[in-house]
Length: 329
Length: 256
Ligand SMILES: Nc1ncnc2c1ncn2[C@@H]1O[C@H](COP(=O)(O)OP(=O)(O)OP(=O)(O)O)[C@@H](O)[C@H]1O
Ligand SMILES: [Mg+2]
Figure 1 (spheres, each protein chain N blue to C red):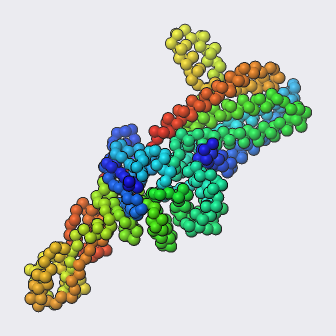
Figure 2: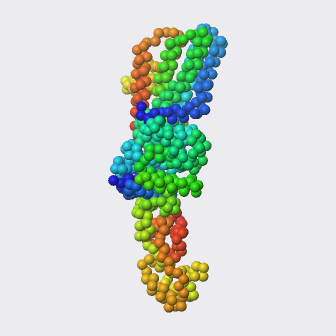
Figure 3: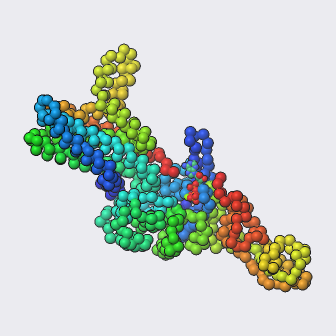
């Protein structure tokens, strides 16, 4: 059984006075295996939070199915084994961290007696030791984020759903959280987290799903996704006239007084190299370049499927078309 | 009680109890109740009666104020500040959430009324009034009325803004005070349809006047135990109906 399974999930919002209908989720299909870290990647406004709210039963879908460990998401029992961190969490500011965690535990019907000892360990685990009795009013954004994480762990969940867990954390906090999530996987837990930060995905996720404008554009093992995506080969050379080069291969550019030819992954590299040598050029390097997640992401955002990156692509993935950055429907 | 419902209730109580506004209103309630002594000096007639009359009126006023203000804010604030995301993502049904909220409010009102009542009892005793069982009964009936008011404000709070909730709740409260006139009014209506309509309203709207036994208590007239029992059942039924309606609305809500 899958830890989380979403089939054909659709959700629309109506504007005021029910005049206009906005289709936000247009049939989401995704599944999360038990014990994996699943990265839910998408630009702002793609529908990540909306999907997560449907998983948590905060929104009811127009159509489609959401199952958590086989149970329908709207059933209260489905939430017994889930830990949830909302986006930009806000908690009661009149409570202390300890009171808040005890309160959260009570919502899982965990008696206070049983919880009292665990609270300190939990607070320590998220790096808030010493702040147990501080009112949440006095917590910083990053501290709230950490407490949100502690709150999500209060029931020792099998599945963690984290909406933008890294937002508001400093570099130390990010690293701590990364280690914590990896440790949770070690314990056999499943983690589903959303982010628009690619580095988070590349460092942790076993599988990713890329959502764009309310549809899942790609889903798969990170390693496969990167390997499967078109690679290209850079041939670096000098001592050859651009005119000559243009004859050999149309896609070439000048970088630091060296010519760089960008070849499709399946192009005949030997032929190109031979031609360059034949024309008196000197080969400096032949680099096979794999697509990074970032490249995949931007090529999806540009609306292209597996387009070969243009010669401007340098692996750091400048957006081919910045106007699509919003990704809004 | 399920720990989840109790958790919500205790937290609701804690929220009111850590709010300065709550203390201020309780304080003013006590202050005005005690200043009834001044009024009793200034007016002619039985000083003790005047003291009880104005004191109880003051407590009544401030308790109703507290009930309305805490009631209209509670659920709305949870939704507005999105703390509700955190609660409803736990294995707890929305019905249980509403039940917990109501119980927390009931506890809050019990504390507020209790504090005022204890001080007022002591005050009456010191002023030579002795222990008056009637006053205890008065507070009990007031508590029933407060529960109905709290349930009304909770209902509005679950789907509209505090300002509208306030207007609706206060309107219902005021209508509830003059409900008894409906029955008399009805006899003057010529058209039967109107008569049925007024009769319907009479049964539908909260007859809060029933809970106010101040005159009987102050005057020392006998109180019909059957009418007290009826009031208890009436309050219970009314609160349950309001909570059921609130739950029906709240179940369908989406949280964006
Ligand atoms: N209540 C609503 N009414 C209308 N549109 C809404 C509503 N809530 C969200 N949307 C729209 O749905 C889209 C998806 O929003 P969502 O919050 O799911 O995005 P997201 O992927 O979580 O983005 P971010 O990375 O910024 O958190 C947005 O275009 C947003 O404007
Ligand atoms: Mg979001």
